[in-house]
Image (cartoon, rainbow, N blue to C red):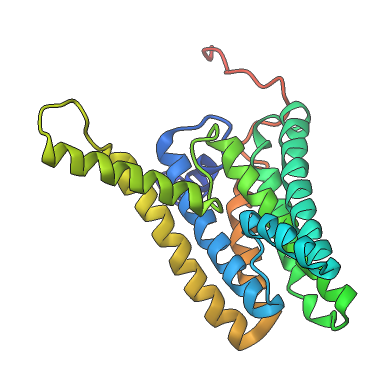
Amino acid sequence: MARRTRFLRPLTSAKVLVSHRRSRGSDYVLALFLAGIAGASNAGGFFALGQYTSHMTGYLSQIADSLAVGNLLVTGTALLAIGAFTAGAAFCAFLVHWARHRMGRQQFALPLAVQGVCLGCFAFGGIFTTTPGRLFALACLCFIMGMQNATITKISGARIRTTHATGMITDIGIEGGRAIYRLVQPGRGASADLRKLRILLSIVGTYVLGGIVGAMGYAMVGFYFSLPLAVLLLALAAPGLSPGPLTRRGPAAKPEGPRP
């Protein structure tokens, strides 16, 4: 029995990350995984397609700039990227609510699994060599990034977003300013939230580290570097989807009463 328990311990830990019952700790660990994958996908997407796929602020600026100079191709590309990212976020929200009513405790594992499958398909995006084909590959990756950002947003109750680096860096600056004010004006009530600052710094650092790995990976093997990223997402989702003694299917699952 003890040996069986040790064998199931990694499975149990993985299920906790996608469980419907959340804690700040599980949100944080899952956010680190997803931030690394997002960084690798975003930086790798630039090497593969010449576009950053999670930078919606940049695409909005591109729309304004390109409309001002009459470049309709750039405008259309930016609109495509924003539309695909939005569609990915919407599809993730739909999946979470659908799984919540149809699959019970698997509501968060399912979107991660779908993202893994989509990222695995993106690994074969190198077959698209024409301009329409490259635009299709760009839309696919933006769709995946939108799904991923929406997944951690839904899971954490909007406390964490893994691709919205602008917001995280802004929060880091705010906490840094509060810390400086505390040093300059001690006893005035302002102080930095050091726990929040550590979380933000670690997520941003993981995103950058993932970007370095992704850039090197896509530079060496191209689109196929998406495969290990897809496998990691599927590995995170699989324990939450697999039936077994640790999983209870169905939306009507209730705690068991005392055994006779």
